Length: 290
Ligand code: SIN
Image (cartoon, rainbow, N blue to C red; front, side):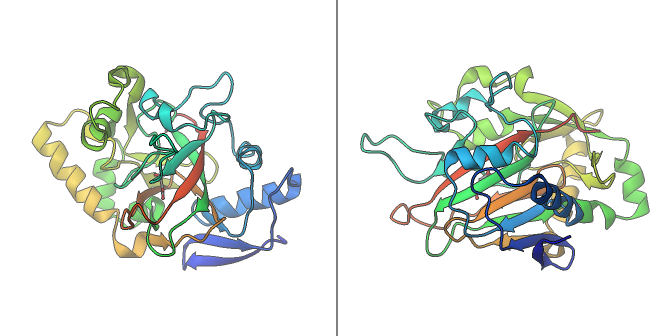
């Protein structure tokens, strides 16, 4: 491998140095990035990438089809107002408004632990976030390694959860995170609700990861509410133990690639509106979790 990189933590994530992703990157570079991404558990940081939205989309397509691509489903309608007007594949996250006072992106997107789009039958695999404008301090994103969270459970707990499935439902986030006038009611229901194994096996590495998240998981199939809440509460507390975390402090032009099959993330909203933050995200459609 010719890539220069350093680990972000002893066993999770890597920062790659000395690459420039503008235009079309070579097949071998892409292959090396993909291999490293899988090897380090699904979190890559590449700094100083001055990418247009088109460059970002072209690079992201190396990971798979994108939500919003022609002939592919878009993200949920509730966030359509935050989609880039010229690039349906780009979801904008921002605390800024345009000259008409309209938000130019979703403010406070993902300020809770979640795995992107887990409420769809085929949820997101990679999310690729480009920091175009970032506050001088604050607005970090925290990632939790769910492969390590699973492997560090006892044999007994693994044997209980290995055969269980849980429902993921956009309504959970919709009712708590979105103001009533913004929520598109049609998003509530089967098209944004799915049953997934609590432990999923990665399609490439074969490793197992925990796959429940407080943002979108509603309940465990076959359990009553009390039982479901008890087990989910335990898992939620366990899966964000400090040893599983990496906190990314953004610099302008950082590009982050995370694997939603093996990680959860949390966007920290500790900055004010006079500190602009503008990010563009491409979201790759993944396989049905198994
Ligand atoms: C997201 O959940 O995709 C947003 C992450 C961030 O803005 O840091």
